[in-house]
Image (cartoon, rainbow, N blue to C red):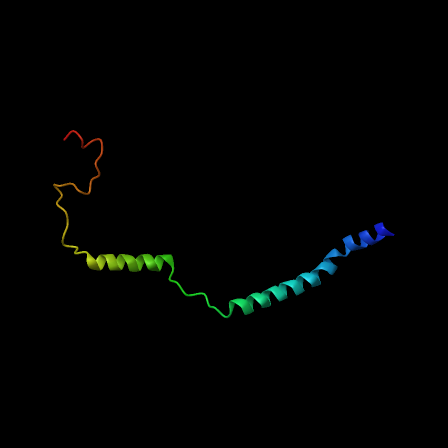
Length: 85
């Protein structure tokens, strides 16, 4: 008799477990919703929008007419080829 019961439980396990899983999930969802309250996720700009805003702010503080001299070569990194000059 026991093998017959185990075979039935194995066959009909999804039909037996599914209602219990639905009830446990619904109770968990309700409890979490009442504990957390009705909090909204705050809106944030996308990374691209934040980057563009940062570039605009940096561009406003910088005077485009002030550039370094080309003779000083501050834009060229110190490399092995410049060491002997």
